[in-house]
Image: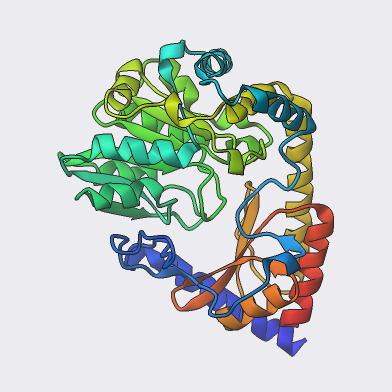
Length: 390
């Protein structure tokens, strides 16, 4: 009993430390092996890099990369398999077909759509176009760092605004952070790395207001894991003529992370500002395009993935919370929580147990981020976690 109480007290002190980030330096992921560390800001959130060698073939549960363990769907696999014989041809027609499907789904015309090899590619292309002459980017802190890191590499500055105590975007403070040098406001909703969601009504009002003077980029990579994604998306603002850019990806719920395809929805002028400098569909292969077309039609598979992900997330949340750990509420395909154990030791022990996870340091305290796998994998994670930490 004392051990559980001590652990809970330690974890709560860690969470208080996270709350103190409202007055601390900016948070950012720091990947020593990513090639980006040269221009990432100094950070209170850093990733533990393994200091040991491990055999990937011994990993029983790969829960480190927010991948969909159920995808691609069988129909997508069949479509991709059949499309390989067309690999000698460019996929321009398939790209046009996919764009038409996306436009119909999002309620806009085709000139509002741009495809790319994953949403991260489109984030970075937007950064190249927006920050070629410097300026600054406003975002929450913490945030997914792709567009911010690219902007900084081009000479832009980052104006981070800490999340609220319930891990939502502090929209009032973000609006105040916008100045004459701001070129773009970035919103990741649901947010990465916290998994939290900002109120859609408040976010729509924020985007509609700020976009009158500055474009707002809303990254919705994890949107489709929500029970009501249509009520939380900002894509309707694009149809209303607002200067809002919305990013989606086939990497998450569609289970196509390794196939690399995503899209943005924006005003035609914004799309042209990017495509006038970089090419769009030439970076896509016919197999990915064929797969994405079929995946959009396989709603039964996507709904099944959403349901299974939520069940596994609830299971892990319940199990880990029962051990005295305070898990940040998430509506995505991952959970993050502080651990009462040295980070490198914890990571090695979990990998030795056959479980791949991510470990981060926040304010000198280690945190575990675990992606949702199958129910069997999550049960294996919980059993391994108990053996390592209890």
